[in-house]
Length: 216
Image (tube, rainbow, N blue to C red; front, side):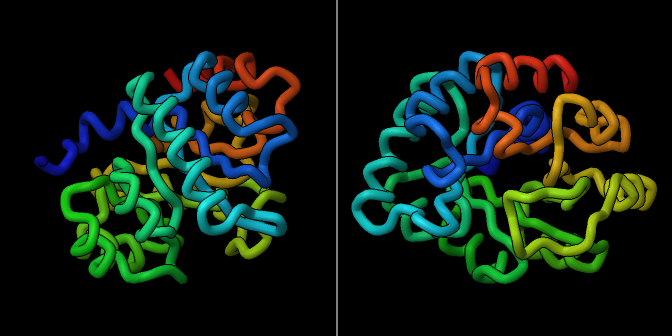
């Protein structure tokens, strides 16, 4: 299988939903079904935090969510857990700076999608050299979902990357809502990623649809 093209990937990154069981007020399967109905374009399974599923339970939920995504043409990305991604034949992996090196992950996953969270031009260049397909930039705005984040970036880094001629697909991460999503896109991002803006919304379908309307 050939590596996904940047053009195709940019379309998938538009409404990038991240979620695990710890981020949900209702069952994760209902959350993903409603989010897909609302128009998400890519899904990342991120099972982290207090009470996160482990072992077989994590594998079983991943398989259920992947099946739903696959039936609806939604790429299924796994956060950090390379073994899980390979065991279920996920569409790709997303890693941070504290995870296994991008170069090593690329060797392990072959032509699957590889996303890397970066916080500077130098980190981006290293990730690109190692085979990253897209960058996650953030936190753009204050976020309460992830406790170990770097300082707030605003849209400055996204704008800097584009001014410096970086054409790699970029998705904004952190504190993004329907109200500020358009600002992130105008700065040069190809998409926005959210967790609780969808998973904890009163109407998950409506929340996903509103985000989609503000980025397309």
